[in-house]
Amino acid sequence: MQTFTIIFVIALILTTYLRIWLSSRHVRHIQSHRDSVPDEFLTQIDLASHQKAADYTCSKTRLGYINTLIEALLLLSLTLGGGLNALSTLWSEWLGISTSIDGRSADYPITHGVALIISTVMLMSLVEIPLSYYRTFVIEQRFGFNKMTPGMFFTDLVKQTTLGMLIGTPLLLGILWLMKEMGDHWWLYAWLAWMGFNLLILSVYPTWIAPLFNKFTPLTDDALKSRIEQLMHKCGFESSGLFVMDGSRRSNHGNAYFTGFGRTKRIVFFDTLLSRLDPPEIEAVLAHELGHFKRRHVIKRIILSFIMSLVFLWGLGQLMQQEWFYQGLGVDVQFIPSTAMALLLFFLAMPVFTLLLQPLSSLYSRRHEFEADEYAADKSSASDLIRALVKLYQDNASTLTPDPLHSAFYDSHPPASLRIARLQKLTHH
Image 1: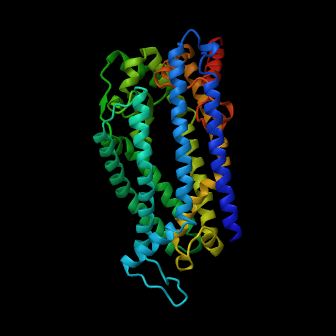
Image 2: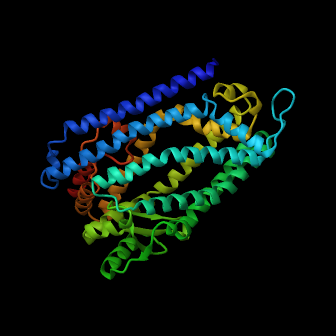
Image 3: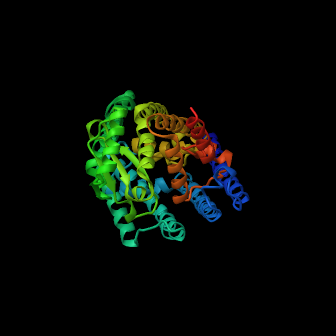
C-alpha cells in the first residue's frame, strides 16, 4: 500500500470520527438543557417552544451521522474501491478510446473528461436524494415546517439538475480545455475563468435563476415600503427593487436577504417573515442585512473565496503531475495523467484534509454577524432587532443551547445568548 494511500485513509477515518463526535456532543448538550429555558429567554420563549427546538435540532443532527458515514463510504468506493476507474473505463469504451502498449491512453479527449465528471456528480447526487427526501418529508414535516409535496420536490430536483447541466457543462468544457492547452500555468487561466463565471452568476441570479424556483412580487405594503426606503436612504443603499418571495410554498421558515451584484441588487423578504414580524422588527432585520453590505462583508467573502480558489487550483497544478497522487487514491495506471481525473480526485479528497479550516471560516463569519448587528443597532434599533431575532429563533425552532465546541466549529452565526447579550449592551449606549 502506498504511503499516500495510508495518509488518505487515516485522514478520512479521523475526519469522519471528528464530525460524528462533534455531532454527538451537540446532541448530548442540547438534550441536557432540554427541560429548562435559558434564564435570559424565560420571559420570551415558552418551554414547549424550547423543547421543540431541541428535538428538531437533534433530529437534524442525528440524520447528519448517517450522511457523514455515507459520504465516507462513497468516497472510498469512488477512489480506493475503483469506482472512478470503472466509470472512466466505461466512457473510454463508449467513446472508442484505445490504450497504448504500456496500458496508458495516449490522450483523453475533453468529452471523456466531461462525461466522467458529470456522471460522478450525478451518482453522488442520486445517493443524496433519499436523505434529502427524508429530511423534507419526515423531519421538516414532523415539526410543522414542510409545505412541499413530493411532486414539487422532484420538480425542483429536475430543475436544479437541468440548470446545473446547462450552466456547468460549458464551464467544465472551458476549464478542461484550459488545463489541457495552457501549459504549466493553466491554473492561472482557469482561475480567471472561474472568477468571471462567479461574477456572472451573481449578476444574473436574481433576475434569471431565482424566479425558476420561487415567485417574486414587488412589495405592496406602502407604509412598510416607505419605512424601508427611508432606511435605505439613511444607509446609502440602492437596489433594483423590494420583493416578496413566496417561501411559504415550500417551508414555514422565514428570512430576508439581499442578492445580486452591481445594478442587479435587490432586497427580498420571505412572505413568512413579513407575516410574523412587526414593521420596526422588519426594518431592524433589514438593517442587519444592509450592515453586511455597508461593512463590505460580501466583497470580502468574494475576495477570500477567490484567493482560496487560486491556492487550490495552484495546488492541483502541482499534484496532477505526480503519479503517487493518482495511484495513492486508487486510480489505475491507464488513467494517468488525466486532467479530468486529477480534478475529480482533488475535489473529492480535499475536504478530508481541510476540515480543520472550518472553525476559522466560522469564526470569520460570526465576526461579520456581530459587525452587522452593531450597524443595525446604529441605523435602526437594537431592541427591535432583539425582538425580531427571538421571534425568528422561536419560529424557526433554532436551539438556544448549542454545544459550544460544535458551535465554534460549524456555526456561521453566533449563539443566540451571546448575540442578544451584545445587542442588549448596545441598547444602553
